[in-house]
Image 1 (cartoon, rainbow, N blue to C red):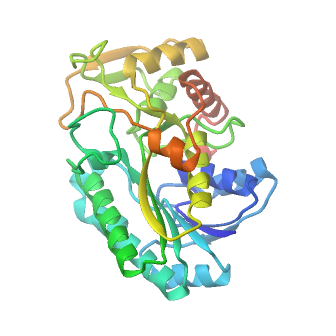
Image 2: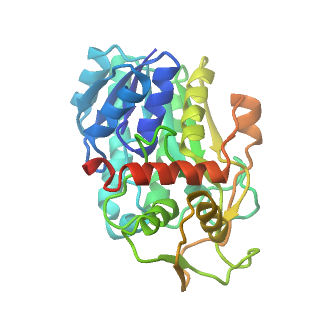
Length: 336
């Protein structure tokens, strides 16, 4: 199958391209490199020994998307392209809605014009908001506390409306939890620009000496050790989940499914596992809670197991080991 992967040079996108190529699909990456690097695409080719097509373009440019879909005779889209920093979304809501929501509308217009019926959308566990029950099931009420999460809810609703209007469309809404880790080769991984927003790259940057210590935001939550609990999932497991969703979309439908490990790990759990795996000491300081942070959340993955025949298999220690290998091999990320 010929697949257009928007944002395919990014963290999750590049790992998904690896799994798509390994599964025998033909891949076209569409990316504007605002938060990614062409080098990631080259390394995907190195890992797989297969070539892919690369189109540099903006997700809001309908004509460019339409041309790529036609030129490469794409039969499906996996849609990662989007801004993703929660804090930044609060400071720049218009930029986030324009890129993430309007960009998706332009993509759907291009798909409609070219007759492409299948899309796998990169949604997020942020659509669940404050937990009314745990673990989160797909029928949990949707809400959000920031423009990033609200944008994900908006796009999910747009895709549902699109399916009603186009009942022969095939749509998967993948709500994933906290991706960490890197490809086992150490060639691709998470490469944040500036101060990392996520825990694992912050830990690895402390371990390699780029940062003095880890700031832990809140040590007095009602959790086993007082630190926040999250559902961490290895990025390769997550990438495989996208391939499984694509394979499942053989008939018209629109469905949402969680992709997570199904268990929660605290910040201290992650730090301890990383120290054991890397042999490095991670100094830290407990800081006050950040507004909007939740004490704990994790996924119910029953639906993914039953419908997609998928489950996360890589352990927290594997996530830590692969993250550390990536950081050691690439101290400056793809910039080297």
